[in-house]
Structures are given as structure tokens and as C-alpha cells.
Length: 249
Image 1 (cartoon, helix red, strand yellow):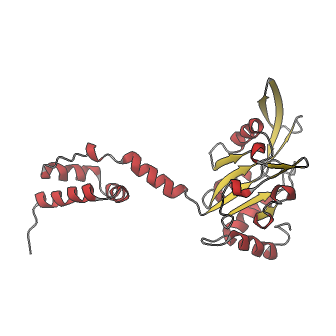
Image 2 (cartoon, one colour):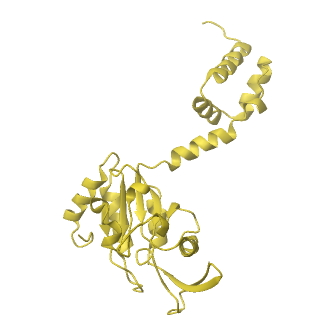
Image 3 (cartoon, rainbow, N blue to C red):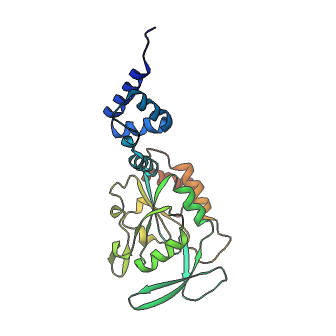
């Protein structure tokens, strides 16, 4: 058996790191303990130090990017889909939100639809979650911050991103993602999804029913029926046939 000295092993390790791509460095550094790596570099007398191989930030960025990259984008309406708001308090459960619009402070009372937060948390593991609302930014941001304190919603689109025609605000999904085979919307309004009807799933409007379970049902349905590499338009068509009472046509 050929004997390989510790010094030669260390040199090989050092050479591997120097010549490796950033991604490979991440994989190697994560798999080795820093203590062992430091010992090897000391033994080989390498000019490369543990400090010099500090790819922590780069590795974290790559790992985070890998974890957050999702094949599908799920676009969600806000009012009457995930929440309902009034300008007068109707329940002790309402959250008071103050919105500054120009020089005016407006007060809204917001209710969160049952299972909305669970819905966001669960589906954030499967889809990139995006809000597309016809509401103005000042109002929507306050509501979304209250609805989603954990930050499962990754992007936000407001009234100024809508297409307005005859007083109606339409949502063009290509502004969110140009690949409509991987993008879909859940909205309580047909007009909201009428520019991309094949990519839309209608949900019942919600106002105050605390026994409502629509989001719980939709969560289970999406997890079961949207599979990797699917064309989302075909998936939606199949769901509408399979769940006619849940996916409104």
C-alpha cells in the first residue's frame, strides 16, 4: 500500500479548494468541520488559512437561494380572499390599522380569514407566494405586514401594477412572471383574473364567517394536485373537473 503523508493529504485538500468552483467550495466547506480543516492547513504549511477560506456569506447566499427558488408562483388576491377590512369596528377580533394617505390618516379594522396564516406558511414550502391587489400600496403594505409577520409572501403588486379599463382593475400575471405555465392566481373576483383566465382559481369571497374553511381545503387540494414539472394550466383544468364544488368555474 502506498503511503501518503499527512502533508501530501493536506496539500491535496488545499489544491482542491483553490481550484474548485464557488459552489463546490460551499459543499466541501459545509461538509468538513472547520477544526479539521484548520489542522490540515496548519500541517501542510499552506499559505491558505481558514480565514482566507471564509466563504460563509457566499455559501449562505447559495444555500438560501436554493431553498427559496420555487418552480411555481402562486399569486394571491388580498381583500375578501385572505382578509376583510371595514372602516368601522364590527368585532372585538378586528385589528386596528392606521394608514397614511397623503396628509390624511385613515383607520381600518382588519379580520384575517380562518386558516390564512396556516395557508401561507404551508404553501410557502411549495410555491413562491406573491400578493397582487387592486388596493393602493399604503393600505396593502399595512395589511400584509399584519397578515404575514413571518414574511412568507415574497413580492407585492398593487393598484399601480393593474391594468385599468372602464373603471375595473385587471391583473396581468405576466407582470409577475412571464412564464404562465408556472404561474397562477387565487382571487375572489373573476375580473381580477380575466386577463389570464386559464391561470385562475376562483375562491368564495370572505367577510366574517369564522367557520369558513376554504383556505384549508384549497391548501390540501394544491399540495395534492400540483406536481413538479406540471403545466399549471393543465393542473388547474384537472382540479376544476375533480373538485367542482371547491374550485369555482
